Length: 471
Ligand code: F0G
Image (cartoon, rainbow, N blue to C red; front, side, top):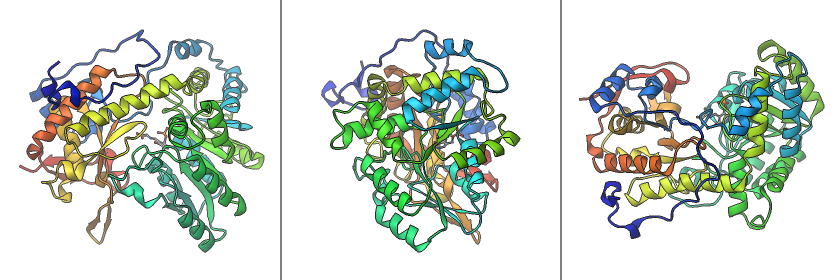
């Protein structure tokens, strides 16, 4: 192997190899690397928005880890068992049983994906103007579902979460003092606490069991419903086992049950740790809230036993939830992500530490430090990564979160480029290709061109914005 290609001079510079995964590959999907001239043309046609790049023109797709995982042979077989009855299908009861087993909740409501679970729950809780929903950090759809109802979404993650270089084991924690004072200052107005595990917007960082327990106590004392946004619950559980004192010898399933027992329920996008391409659910113990949601959902999602999904989707999700707490799998997954982080770090690429559970987040402001923020340095870097290597990544920074007040931009603290790693999809060879390509681009970073926004959508700007390069 030519170590210089990855910007490392000898084998001794190499980080330890990650644990190999507990599976082998049964089916493959071909991909190719379009020639550089074609990639430049594609970027131009896409209006320099990575969401517009046709996926067949992408060699490695790190846009998201959501809905992009590979299903197992067991999941594909489960599809055949799907009971497509409109109401009270066998597949629903199978899913309910697995969720009860893994999470311990009584009531289960399937939804077509995570954001529908958010929409229904905030509706049923009647969030409105003057109300607050509090989180460590809301994910963008969760925030949008609070704010479309006129309520305010408040992030109370620990201050260290905004410091890219601080290496703390649980940077996804809520600041407990801030939570206590916010709740007491706004008595009766905090209608829900939603804890995102792991914290996606903050770099895939976990929340400790101790923090969850403290939040739970505050929620119970103040009679506030406490839900986990549990899209990446298994990765959070793995981090608790490996980083929190007292959990090292415990079984992952036991840790998961303890974590869920501290909350009143979960809002879940099954597209991450559910290991499926589509699907989500709400699970909870509150009978009254459950009945409210049941009645609301028939209008948009479908009958409460299928919630916008086919019976076969429910089967695949049930099987995925059974598979995901496999310790060997989680170790190889999280070590694979960290290995990419270490290869990039060794080449000096600026990034967020510690490495996240589902991806590596690059620091766009340092990567393209020659570009002013008005030229979207992180987004420009994401476009340059595609041009350079046919790898798609995504900006999670200014383009996604900056606000405009009286014509002036207010920039968010973090300006990142996320390399989200789909589950069970890419091999170590792919990881080397990613590390090599991004390392090389970093060494030539002065070539990254700034971008000018030519179309600025009023909401969820990043999905539809268009750009042109500044020559
Ligand atoms: N909560 C979190 C923490 C998420 O990361 C997502 C989606 C959702 C809720 C919404 O779930 O997509 O099933 O409706 N995250 C994806 C991502 C889109 O790329 O991080 P959904």
